[in-house]
Length: 350
Image (cartoon, rainbow, N blue to C red; front, side):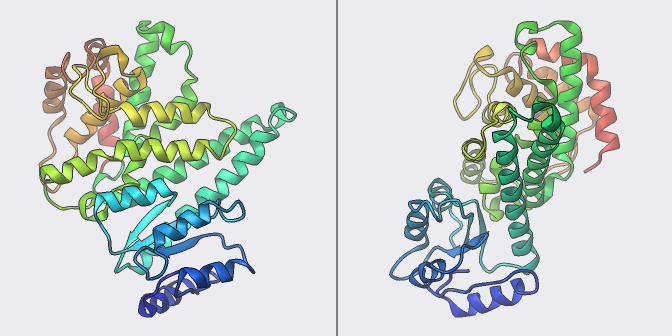
């Protein structure tokens, strides 16, 4: 734990020492001195420090083969989007804003260590998959799912306003895809999908929200236009996060689905969406499906700034978006299974 503020350093050590072996360092220089003797599982790093800032420190860490894979969580009082984006681009895994609470800090650390553990195991299994394919296939699939579920749980922990959203949208996607297969629509594209991997990967569609500051993500009111623009950056942040996982694994199929879904589920059929402004079938089919699932769930869910729409109201709004927000052909599929959507929403509440 690196922080030039001794009060923060002592507070953090008291919170962590019942669960972890903690090495406090009041400066980046002391950190690198400590690294000569130990290789920690994780580094908590302050940004604003004299002599060497957190940004300079993480650059130095990532340039050293010995230290580059150590996950870094920034501890910072900086809560603007540019600062967080810069930190993520430099390789930070997460942010914890100061003053920090003990439970939140511990949960963030736990989630990051779980991700690292699963990534390492996944990489080992993937590298040996060719010679052990029959014996290990089931274990690899389970491990992939564990990675996805761990990351998805991290997102849900951050975004307390959308409880159950990830599970519901995954089930909505399954409902739409089952009907898509039955109807034969987009048969050529769908025939190339591994449906099991696609559905598991759908859990990562909002993974980029881990890069959004708590002040916006947990705001108990409608976002301002400026805040909404910051919220929209979760798409690019999600793509970066998934690509980072891909860089540490040799098996990418299930992450390719996640990449397409996370990167395109806010695009609109008429080109008015984000981040790329894609039009029509230029939007990946996976993203067009998730757009329907995501919007339906947002409509039927209560938020501090709006009431929950009824199922029938949500259906009407989505149907009105056919040809503008949504693929018209997929809206026809949606109409056939909208009863299943309502069933899921009732069984898995907010």
